[in-house]
Image (tube, rainbow, N blue to C red; front, side):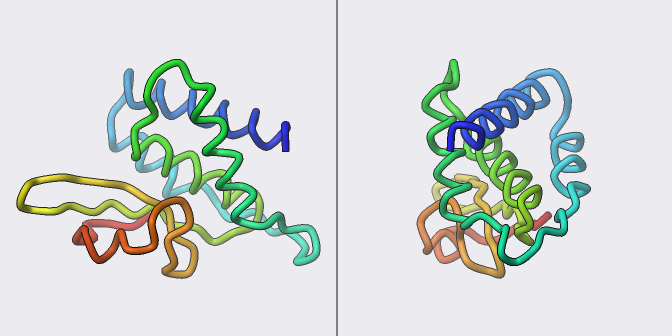
Length: 125
């Protein structure tokens, strides 16, 4: 688990840097282009364990982790470990709010299960 938390923490730092010094398009492209790494069925770690590692890594970040940063890191982490994950970006009109989360096969992986009911999905990558 320690290795997964460190890997997650490094991903969070990477996306923090991108969000601060680069553009949203760059972050989006990195997530979209991250391939799902083929992994033997018996060696795939549970998605819950990978999401938990990202959540724990968020605690060790220097500043508050935003949902876009967390969902980007979670999506990349899951794909690197054999899961076909998607980052989903949604918005709510009144009051205006936007949010990002990660899904596996249409099921929310790193947030509350009713996110798609609250937010209109704008994009998936």
